[in-house]
Length: 495
Image 1 (cartoon, rainbow, N blue to C red):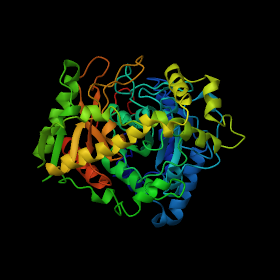
Image 2: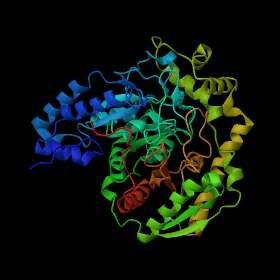
Image 3: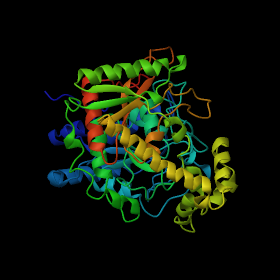
Image 4: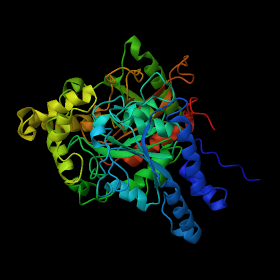
């Protein structure tokens, strides 16, 4: 007897198994996703995770079903898989708003490069997700979408800036999501929503067709419920794009398949460095630190050697590596100019002068606009030099101790309640300040409370030097298979 398909916690593999047996179609899968969105995004817990639902999703699913019936063996690796895009990824057939009321009707001429690759692999763009407006901040509130809520604790934010994607994937509105990461904007919602997030090496994944914040810090990557699904998605997203010259650095650096390299004993013999500089020692840090101790215990039980280390001078250096403030004006002007004269906003100055953004974002953009010729400013040039210093500092310390990866909590404290203007004490700087890859994965939950019946998710992060995504994903997968941390939120139960 065939077990009925359950959308909740479905994976790419389970969906494709359903397609092969005839027990599931893409249309049925999309209908199930749409039903959950209808029940939970504006009703029930009212997560407010989405800005636009694709009105042609069922038609697209029917087309994909016909393609499967005609020649299933020649379909792509993400065939029929619903994907939710952060709404700063350009789509030619849906608005791309950045969460801004001023951009409500902006529809670019072509897809972002990564969206082209996802569609070519058979993925179905189901919806566009809310975000911290223009991806400037970490709590996922926007003038167009309002405040997204964390499905594990409806009094808290889902992290940010890709918090709409995080909340939607955690709540099983789709299987896969995209995020962008200037500071820690893929990894913050992954940590806060019990998900896997990958910030890739600079040059592995194209940024063309994304609303930018920075030339040097911006990255795009997958958000998923399992390491395997994140790896399968990265297989598709990675690749050279002539529209983003930095991706030439990634040519030949990706394996044939990140997903194929996952194995449950990957931690055996690994040397992992717990970076105590990024671990808090105050009472407010205790819930996160309790989870991290459990992460260490599991890794050691799986055969890893864990060393505790501090890197002198790390805090002073990481305080002066961010470049986005100086690059934002030039990066945004390039994006808006490329939208064409028919777009509702055609320059960064015009956008700022609409004064429609949320207060904190408005203030940040006004400060960016005020910087004349940011790329020539002495402070900016010093920060570029500091980025190289940080790369060498981390790589040399790892080499001295023969470490395969560094480990730390992505956030030193639990994700903040709604009403805060920023998420404090995040640890994304090591990756965004170096260009090194990082994988955030579910480490565990804090103690349950009345508002968080499962507890609040806590994400751990692994980082290593350039183009080590395969190794990091394998370690995260080995932990995932041993610890089995992931649980769906109780606020969005099966229908």
